[in-house]
Image (cartoon, rainbow, N blue to C red; front, side, top):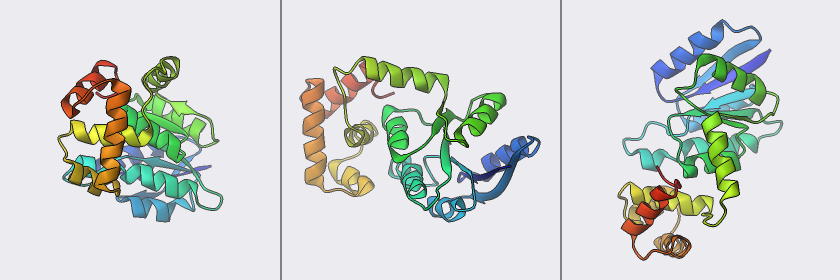
Length: 210
């Protein structure tokens, strides 16, 4: 029996996933979590956590690290369960952050039910479970290494694209404004641009940001 925790701040999403999974042989939802802390607390009894990335903030950018941080904390537990990200967000920063935090898979919420079930069964035994579009983007990133931004640089640039100031970015990522400026300097150099607007535009043209 695969024991599951559903971690999502939307009750309707949790109810829908529980209803979908309840009829599947060999799957059992043992807990639901509405916050990252609840997900970490419930994880010790599970085989797999279905993890959203952004939890309940009015400012989604500030919440972007919630699921990633919870994934990292869960994977640091003794005998940790695996984590399958199930989310609406598919920027490079989101994807790479989740994978680097230890997620076994990454699926979008519009995936067909059979794809979700297959990903759950694969991720629960430690196999990679990536949505086809996500896998293709990661492969393209590997094949086109001429511009390679670090996870932190992607996080900073993603927040710049959302209109955040250096002060707001520093607060959201728990780093100093000086560090934000350093990351932006690296981004500008790698993208061969000289402004925040140009960096966002270039990143979108290259498929780094959406």
